[in-house]
Image (cartoon, rainbow, N blue to C red; front, top):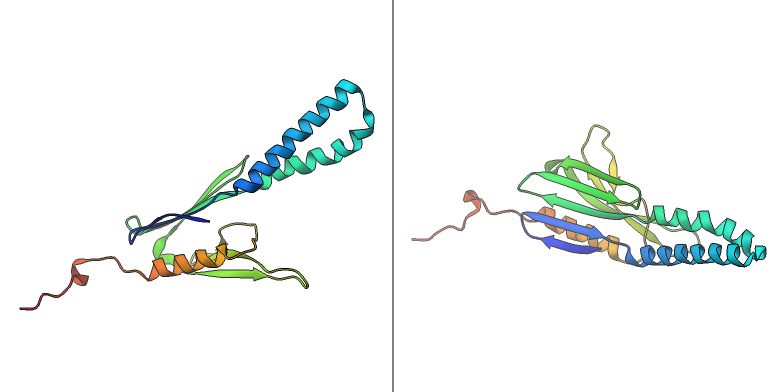
Length: 167
């Protein structure tokens, strides 16, 4: 997670999973080389590994998701953008409808806890919108919730909020 902009008027958070993108791309290129070697040398012993590995690695390329959250006071809008290798999706909501951001944590027995950020938006379905379908370990999700909560609490300056002048 990276904070792209944090001003009283606009908060932009972004998640670009470079590590997984690069790992899946390298694995996919390795499969292409593997297929080429099998066909060129007619070494059919490696064929079962390639037949099983190809769909798994290819699926991984489509699962890696990049997202961006834009909270904009000047336009009173929330924009959530999600992008995968095959899809681009944008959701928009009114900023006043954002009630809070919260951390959703899942912990299986004997495993480390994983988290994701949920935005509670008052829409007709009145449901929480996850920023990502993927749960992550570490403290990034908690930091995002904290950043969003702090930003929502910041008031912008208006003529009524201007400092009082003493005579």
